[in-house]
Amino acid sequence: VNAYLTGEVDPGLFVVTGHLHAGADPIVGEAALWQELERLKQTSPTDEELQKVRNKYESGVIFGEINVMNKAMNLGFYDMLGELPLINAEVERYKAVTANDVMISSQRVFREANSCTLIYKSRHESR
Image (cartoon, rainbow, N blue to C red; front, side, top):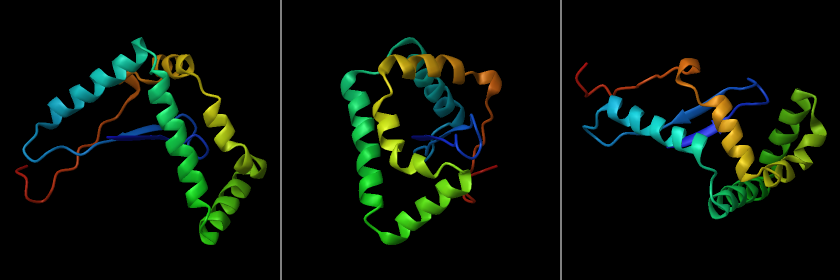
């Protein structure tokens, strides 16, 4: 399972993706995903979980910008948004998120009534 926010380009679009084991029922998988999202709405992440996400994000930014092409692409992206200074503030903004912020945002965003589910099946699966 992976999740990301497309806040800069499509404000408010939160995408969750996942891959099922062979033979797994997509309905059961989706239900398990919603169970985890509901847990986030009721329980703040631990300090360890939050720090792990912060570290992963920061290391991704730092290592990603070692490559000159990636740095140029990021500069172009933030310039396209009209938010060029944000390129130097993004990591600090992630570090400032608290466990309570995550829970409050989860309560606001994770609602089945506002969601769409798309299930891709391989060519080899029965229809």
